[in-house]
Length: 267
Ligand SMILES: [Zn+2]
Image: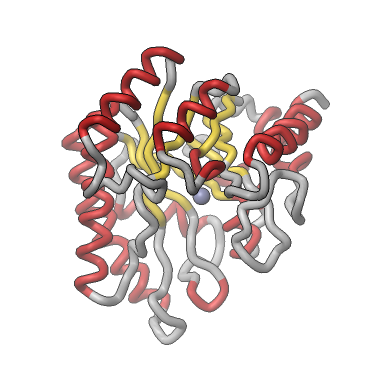
């Protein structure tokens, strides 16, 4: 199991400072989140790209890119065009940084009145366009489970397997977001088992079962022992990306999350 850390941990910091801090703490797989200051794909400067590349050389880093948060299944045509733009612009930034993987969200209903089948169809349309651009650039997409409660359009974890098959390039990996899974009513360990061997990444963060809090591991309702033992027993070789939000102290949140991982990896 390969551990990575998302720059969401320092979400209010400049992207270079956030990536530099994570690298200095000894982590080499880093998710660059486009919502951080200085990293929106429409605004990122040559200087930022250059400094991220220097950092990667200095610490031997492996980057992946998380685009701005958009709705893949937006009902409004302009909003959906904006989502396609954000994804493709993030793919281009990823290519310049030598990042091999870019995250895409499965999407959600724009409002509870939208039929599940309609949202599914819109997600497919977006993913086909984004997938074609990713294939041109030689980048692998990671399709992440999103959308819950009245806004979700997937009923079971098997639905994401269907979506990836019909709408994404063949090499697309599945990304299991643990916090989203809980809100969707999916058991993270069972979902991981179902998605193997296509499971490429985990977004690891916790919540209290109601909202997408991105808490440190062990601070919510997720059964980490069950998920981590499932991954270890399966000799899973993907990236376990810690995607904890910026709480009071990012370094402490990361240390707390690492303790939970180490405890369960060891048993
Ligand atoms: Zn996530």
